[in-house]
Length: 550
Image 1 (tube, rainbow, N blue to C red):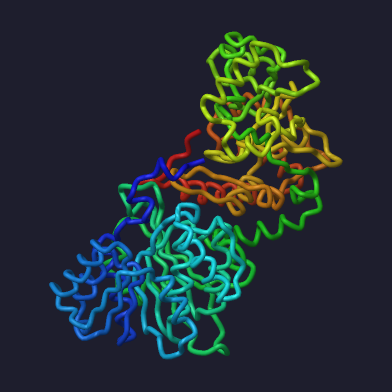
Image 2 (tube, rainbow, N blue to C red):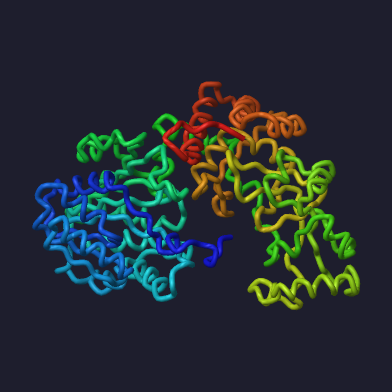
């Protein structure tokens, strides 16, 4: 978990400014409707003002900008004056509060919105801003979650201030496509807009952050009765698309509606053949939703992992042997799909924290050695942390149990289940899985296949660095084939996963698992290619094609 004290000032204010050439492209697109009033809800130092000024016809346009930082607001005003946007007003105040004051005022409507909203986590916002972010959702009758990033509220507020037929053009985080906390926004845009287009680059546009970004082009419906076309995806490589007219780009992708864009928009990244095949396999009698064959629970929550998860050296030094139990919790602890004594010994030899300290009363009285270790924790003020201070005593960890199957919360290429042969414990970096009417080995073995891998890409989310993460509700929706006729050598599969590229393992497992369902080789390859496309997109870090690396 990241803590606010560890973040840079730039990240805390979400200050990543749009490259000028992208800003000009967005300004050109909104200019096509000859806007008289333009909103820039987070103008920073005025990069979009410079972009507007480069396009003929904007000099007399009324431009309203907002920038909370006074120094940046002053720069924006100076930029507007310098480039000749004389009808520009920059407010050095919170845009969300201003929006709340004017959302229901019919006289305050804009023809166009351009900008790059701040990328700031909800928990990093000061409390007044958190309250305003939540109130935006309430005013629009939308479900709100405290995981919501500031950019979501900015887009919602901006869209609500847009007149019918108006246009919104923004650089937004790529996570708009897949994160759960943006579902309210995706649904709202789907209802409000005639047409939506995402310009999706292979590379990162912000060199000083791992945060992927896309361009959102949205045209609001002219009336409630107008039927929305849906969402179009426009993948790009490099800056070649900037040579095209914005209207050409906006009208190029085929719009997709219905099931594909009702939830996450990740499905829209796939071609029609792959989407159709995925839907077909979803209803196959030997394909199951994860929630129907297994139960997912979070791992043990200690509140202070460095205190409770320790290497053998700490156990020896503090004589904690009777309190120590085997554990794993990271991908490097489980390079395959089997966690056994051999893997545990190898982890311990590397000095990994392979011991979970469980100070339960049934193990005996607190002796001098344990008391010394507890005092060490209190000197570090661990007992004042929230998860610890709500327990009595603070060093007793609740909900301690192990399961025969585990699953790491995050993965690089594709998630996998872990066959836990020694009853090791897992922390909240992993999930505890209990099977229902299916053997643990069969579930672990069948879980590795192209269909489940593709399902994980469609259900999961990813952030900077391209790591795939799944929360319990997303795991429950995964598709898992369990053919009656399948035969999997779990030891050989474990060895393959440790030594072969993921794509090769999935290809082999496609033959074994999907082939046992009667799926043709061509369809197996179609599913595999769908996974590869989404995985490569998730891993993108430059304009070079992504590689399939373990």
